[in-house]
Structure formats: C-alpha cells, structure tokens
Length: 221
Image (cartoon, rainbow, N blue to C red; front, side, top):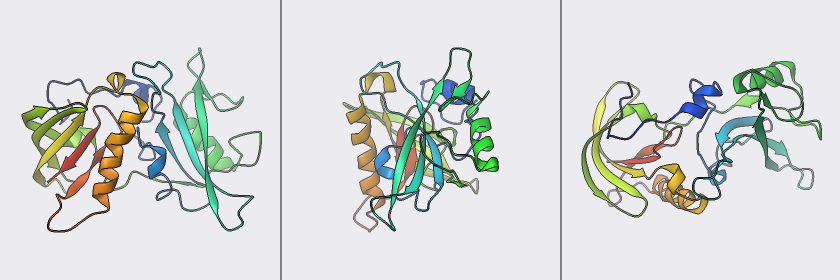
C-alpha cells in the first residue's frame, strides 16, 4: 500500500513491467531541461519516460539519456537520447539486441562496455541516481485537500524523509498525465526547477518533486 493516498490511484504499471521501479537511475518524467545538471561526465546516463506530446497519447516511451563528448565542440559534452522500444513479444530493444527488461539491457551494456547503438560509439559508464530533491511518491501523504486549479490540486500533507522523520508540507499535485500535454508538464516542472534555485527567508522552501510515478507532485514547506 503506498504511503501517499488522496483517493488517486498510485500508477506505476509501465515502470514495474519494465523492471524499473526498484532502480534509482530511473527518473520518471524528469524533463530534458533538468538533465545537464545531472549528466556531467562522458558516459553518465539515466532512464526516464518521455512526455506525451498530446493528452491521452499512447506513445509514452522509455528513454536512455547519455552524456557524450561533442565532436564539434572539443571539451564539451552533449546529451544523446535513445528510445527504448518495447516489442510485441514484451522484450525491449534500442537497435536489434533484445532483453527481457530494461535493467537487463542496462546491465549488459554497462558490464560489457558495448555501445548502446550500432550507429556510432556510445558507451554508458555511470548510472546517475535520483537526487535528494527527487522524492518517492509513496513517502508523501495527503491529510487535507485545500483547492483545485487548472493543472491540479493543492493539499496539506506529510513528507517522510529518508531518516524516517516526518515533516508537514504543502503538496501541489498535477492532474493525471492523460489530461496534460507536454508543454503543461514542462510548465509544472519549470516551477519546481525555479524554486530549487531560490533559497532565502522570503521564498517558500522546496522539499522536492515526485516524478517517478503518477501523480506528479511538487512538495513545499
């Protein structure tokens, strides 16, 4: 039973089926704009889920994002994104090699030092785990709904920290993904990104965001 309960279903079926729900290198719906601060060295990588272009789009896909040296800019890195396709037989592929799960795909290329694409040499070297500001959905509990807006709901609640301490918080919860488009999700996440960069007595403190499963949440003091 998830710690978070507001009458909403806790949705992680795709992630669980792909074998990702127990892996800290899975960052959920973390957008591209947050990746440069995480993938700093050549070979740094993470797994995330693509944002739907339109609401109710069936094309949500898993992406492996990898930091690579930019051949046109010596000394600088660029981030490459590869779609991990799920076949009709349930196996996962990037090019042609098939795997029963995404973690098996990752482990194979990581341990053998084999490029994840046949088009050019692209090695994954270091899995980048979720950051302290990337919260677990099941560590967040709503105690009272305060209101509702265009993008979702606002709740009072409790956040359970890694040390098991529980702190009172405000929760801004996005609507179900199938009702939001790509730009709305980006706008929701941009708000959280801006809050991370401002810490002073006059600005509400951000505890973090929960993007590894639905519903997406911004958690504040």
